[in-house]
Length: 187
Length: 175
Figure 1 (cartoon, rainbow over the protein chains, first blue to last red):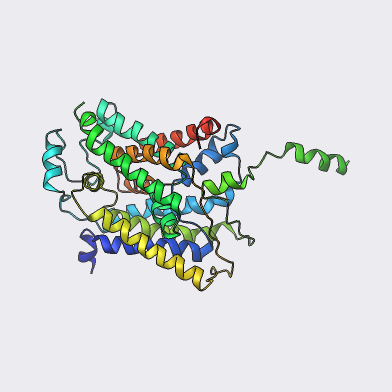
Figure 2 (cartoon, rainbow over the protein chains, first blue to last red; figure 1 turned 90 degrees about the vertical axis):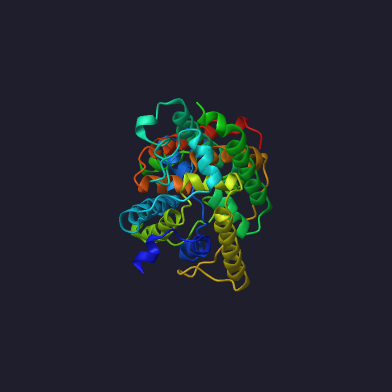
């Protein structure tokens, strides 16, 4: 059993568990699945700076921070006891393309050739980590949610704004991955 | 003496944002429970997070490579994960609405209609750019740190700065 769990899980297993997170949070306490809000709660609790957007009773949203803490802990558990010793398998076309940028380390799902402390101050890693992170935080809040709040929770509740947001996420991703990222990786 | 204190109290209470549209727009504070529980009741949400976090890692949703494949149409994997999640989620929401299922504490489960804003498009595009760069949306960012990729803490701090900047500029941005 444990050997099966150690292998990468197929998409339908992950999809069912991620989908069941929606009713689990609703049934446990009428909570709507959403993760990017946690970033707002951190701002509200640590740096509200008299900004109206951060003036609310963030303690009522403490559940969200517990949920995020659980995600981190779950990742620790998966890495400590369920790790797959084999290299990450990727599409050959992607591997060919990445090789031309010197990205060839497949030991981790977070490529060590790009996302490592020793490369943080190189132009391409700095852009991917710092600018990329900023866009995730700014964009999700401006859009009113992320993949969980819009693409999963919002679409589950048949919300048109969430469908528009999800299509925008995908459009931004296609533009970056195909048109801009090659230039960043070449730096 | 007591009266003076009471009279001055509201003036010192920090202004609380009660604008429903602002709140509903951001999917928060909208389901105020009438029951107050001790803090450790929140541990049940941590338990759900643990299952979700393990799944994100084991199904390679946190993989930068998987996200690149998705945005290059080189693999069905991520479309399968998100598509299945939406189908299971939608069926669950339908069942909860259809049978008026209550929470485990007997409270009514509420759903809100989201209101379209230009932010859904502009913010969505900006998030999409960031998603393809970091190879992670907010959930996977946290999970990546849990797998030992500690440099991603910098990306999370930057995401917090991005969220703060949005809050700072909010009144001046088109919505």
